Length: 173
Image 1 (tube, rainbow, N blue to C red):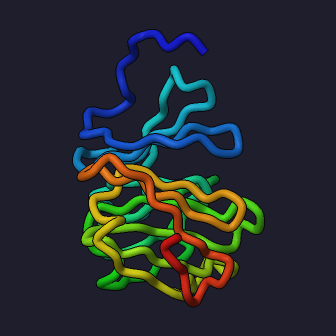
Image 2: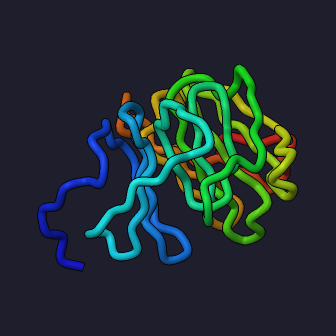
């Protein structure tokens, strides 16, 4: 794709974008319409989510996070399917989905909380396990690959590797 300058479909504080299942999805923390989609990454359509939240992250797997809450949305119409709240999820969040199964979501938030969430039934997501360590505070990015979650930290420009084969007891490797 050649990315020409373009105007978003709505005036908002756009912060994150992801690409999944042939659709770009962008989310914003403020503004009237805080979700927009595009099939080509150039022409964007404003979407009205079922609730007005300060969206600060979005991850592959139809999931986004807000402060203290993970909300599962239906990709086709952006309706809320399920949600989970926890103090472990407070702070700036980053998400990664276990692409091997699509049933486990990993969330990392300040101050260094790593949370494993079961999303096999998206209507009732549940925390399976967690880990708290200063090494993973101030996360800027996260990804899952072959039994490990990788968390990039803004504070010290490091990447931490977390072993997640046993969801109830993630281990900083």
